[in-house]
Length: 330
Image (cartoon, rainbow, N blue to C red):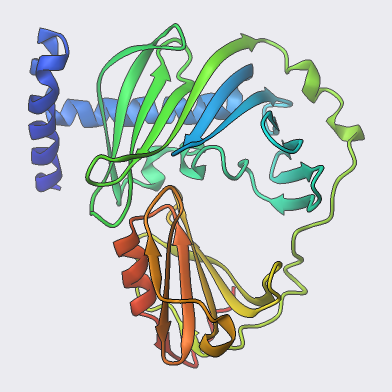
């Protein structure tokens, strides 16, 4: 723990000239404590507040504007609606722990998830204590974002196996206003920024009639999932990653028979695909970005690892796959 406090202290010294003189007096311990307080306030805001917002999500040259509605229905169930404004008409509706994805291009489906996948990391909706073992959060200064005074947080991985995050929270409400995901070297890979937001005591009108909306079929039925067929199993992932799902299936676009594993540390997810090397016919490759990808070969099988992690981390996961008869079905 000491080395992380020292690292934070050095970071605060480095940025001190950019802030007020009082910033230099903030200790690393106080910055970490305030970071956790602000993070937990953000988590409550994402669940409890009624709001309507517009935002822009960007990954490299890809820019997607959205409209975001959120409401707290009965203090135990929150509602969320996302409308994507570029490309085909796509919408995501969440009612409690059921999330429905609709697309004019086809492929509408239902997931059991209490967050809308693809917008904000799931851990942002929960207390910081859930990820404290593998991440450090510090509070330091702030600036105006979307015309509102904002508190700046830096979410730092305790190792180099994960990405870091910069967050700006509304000082009045604790609401997330801006997010940046970065490599350990500081390269910005993904950004999200609200361009407008309005709060209300009542849930947005767009969420008042969700009970009448037709629900699409489930993406998968856990009782009908096929068991794993290949003997290759994950043998290493960064600390904190737990197995959430594993099964055998045919990939949607190629119909390639594949074993699938999904791991998460609460903040990000990693998917592992295992198939016969001769049937997959892809070269060995590695790509680092908002969704990094590594494809390699182990014991006659093709292993593809995808996730919001550095490519070196994905490569290590892939190269540590081992032949085992242990059942990892979950």
